Length: 368
Image (cartoon, rainbow, N blue to C red; front, side, top):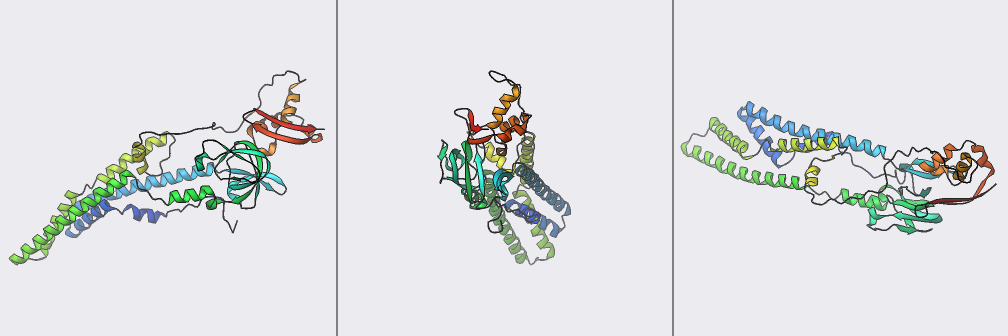
């Protein structure tokens, strides 16, 4: 663990101070701050207060939404932490997948998400869906010696494997790192930057022209003094306030924040406000959902007898074809229904064939 680190993707947490400073940075923010500074210099405190309130309100909205999204995402990731069946002290145990390290021996089976990059070392076969990583539409058939990638899903079979890579060193981890470093800006951000840059250029050019004209005029009339300089600054302030949409960032943030609030009522987490505008620009959204989200809390219902003497005889046969260490919800429900669990001790399972969704069977060869 000291050598390779935890089996998790590294996340760079941004400090609150860094977020706060970053919120005051931007083309339009710079213009608003310049207008506030000039207002303070010439003593227009009413303008200064109004401009600063708008700026602080906009920053507060951004920080509040960012903090709320970060907390929700952290809770979501904590609740969805993957588990793994790893060999510990001679037997398989369910552990947190984040504690896996290269060299660990684990077992994968139907329905499991592969917790790390693996090399399969024993078992008959496994069919693994790698579409999220490789784009393959058909599940790949794996045998002993093949690799299984972190994040892929086991569709059929059961095999044992050795962990060969964890965390950022996995195929999935390297892909996630490339995506994180892409740094793409949304269309809304690009539009805001373009508007801000355009307004900055126009306002600066006009301010320079007006200041130069005022200074030249005062020098020509020999009336250059403090009051004349303050008059020039006052004119520059009027020019800045008139040329920049002071309330635009505030209105933009409030509109997106209201959209995020509506999405949160539908259990959708917005990590960045700008993503709402990106989603609104989508013409076609393709999604794929397989399986059903459940709590894995199953109980065995009423058993229909055909040739068995009683219900427990059927449950006993089902228990022989189940493995408690696999933590399968159906297997666990069958095993928990068996009343005389001591009767299993006299039986030895020679061969076990895990559930196959094609044949709809789980088989075990056993003798007493």
